[in-house]
Every structure is written in structure tokens, then in C-alpha cells.
Length: 386
Image (tube, rainbow, N blue to C red; front, top):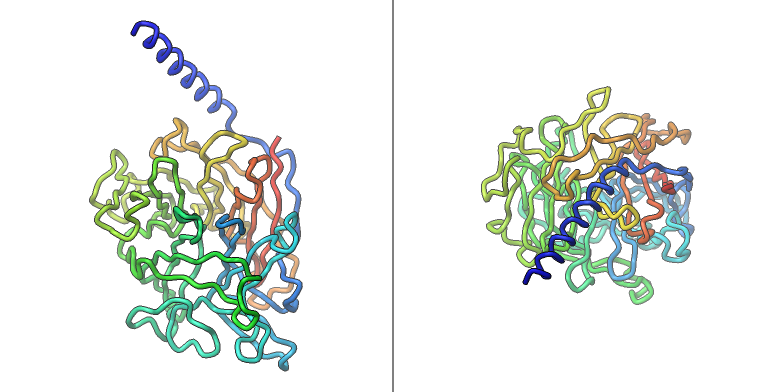
């Protein structure tokens, strides 16, 4: 027994020393950032435009989602197609190049070039992948603004989509939990180049609550799924809920961090003390989009996110004692993309909607980033750590 106690003490001391040593290495420094250019699909014309981003590695494929996707089918007289969202695989044809996309959708007269995952009814030529809930018509839209995590059997990509009025009000109604069946496009009939899936919870969190999960999801080793949201107080922080992975669809099993402990009661949506991170940059911009993930290279859970400013600056932070609910470090700047030089039909010539893809390089030595500009273009770059 004495030898066991000594061994246990030695292990605990080693862990403590490792934790302290690991914390002292923060922040990690990038050796350099290599711009990769625009993400495109060779089989689609250069008129394809969309924004958004965020994805995950599921069933051997690097899934990525986009918002408000438009393209012109030159083969059919320049007819413009539109989808509130669309999906692609990164590096499907060229495993070394994430900007080489395989888009889901058909170059046919009936479906133009994108297959929509638009969940509203009456979407015309676009196929509805999931059944829509009541009153989801008109300017109702679903945006894929976060990442995706694999189901237990690694066959479905689980994600949170934000449901809103894309008309005059831009009102956020709620978010929804979806499961997308990730399959090889070569196993799909050529006339039905689509993904299938289901809305696991049509309405998960409402706009009068914290929209947990709309920022990012983190599948932890403790069999919990952590759902991060940006604070409703003008996006000045990040809050978190968690749920046992085996009961994702049961809101009665969700717990919420209130700043002191996990509770079955949600904190007030404007209560900044419940945030795991409160942050604004020098211009008053808080976290907007990003990911939380475990870096194998740094042996550290961390977050990389962009703020709500027009520069699209990427920031990074981590929980200082290793636990998700510990105090997170003051974010440090990782990378600010150059101002867009492309033609901006919308006039929105700025960078936004930044995302990280830690699974692209599972060693963690590099980190793939993406961001949007002009409501039209997806840019990518690789961070190479020292």
C-alpha cells in the first residue's frame, strides 16, 4: 500500500509539473502562415459564390458547409441558382489540397449546380434534404455557421444550424440539431448527387435563450458533447452547455455552466458572469465564429476564433488549468488576413466568418484556416507552428 501511495503521488506530481510546463508555453507561435488562395471546385464555373465555412472529419471525409450559395449555370444560359446552404468535401480529388472542393449538387437544368440543404418549404428547383417544421416558409433560412462532429459510429456528421428570417428583420428564431449522412460521392447515382440526413431536434434553443452550439461543438473524451455559444450581450463572450453524447436529443439531460457550476437551469442570456470567456478587442468586437478543439501538437485544448470586426482577425485562447470551465487565457492574435482584393458585388469588402479545421492535419503541426469575404469568396491559409 505504501509503495502504491508513493507511486500515485509521483504520478500526480508529474501531471502537475506537466500542466505547469504546458501552461508556460502559451501562447504558441506561428512559424509562418501560408495563404492557399480561394477554395473552388474545378467542375463548377468561377461564378460560384458563397460564404460561411466550418466543417469536420467524419467517415474519412473532410466535410465543410457554406451559407447563401449562388452560381450561374453557363451550360443553361447563365441561369442563377441559389441555396441557403451547401456542402462540399475538401481534398476529395486531391488529398493534399483543401482548396480543391467536391461540391454536392448537379449540373443539370433541373437542379442547376447546387443541391440545397434549404429546410424551408416551396424551395423550387432545390431539393429539401430534411422535412421542415411548421411555419418555416417565405424568407426562413438555415445557416451552417459552425463545425461538425462524428456520431458514435462515425457515419453521421452532427451539427447545429441557426434558423432565422433572412428577410428584412434578420431575426434568429432558434437553432436545430442535424445529422448528415457522410458517404462517398462515387457511391451516389450521378443524377442524385446529394447528401441525406435528418433534423434530430428541429428546435433546440430559441432566440430568447442562449443559442448553445451555434458557435461550435466539442466532442470530449468524457462522453459529453460541449455546445458553445456566443453571448447574446452583443457577442462579448462565449458560454457553454453540455449533454451526455448518448442523449443529445433530450433537452432534459442538458446542463449549463453558470459561472460556478453545472446546473440544469439556464443562466440569463445577458449574464456575462456565466461566460467561460469575456473578450472584446480594441474596437469593441467580441468572438463571432470559430472552433474549440484539442491540439495534439500542443497537447492542449484551445479555441481559435475570429472577432466581429471587418478585419477578420483570428485569435486563440485556452483553459488555463485544462478544464473547459476553468478561466480561459486572455486571447492573443494569431493572424489577420489581408484585405480582400476581389470584386465585391455586395459592397461588403471585408473579412469575416473565420474557421479552423484541426482535423485536416491530425498531427497538429499545422492548422488550416478559412474565412469569407464579399459574401462571395472562401479563402484558406495554413498556420505552421514553431
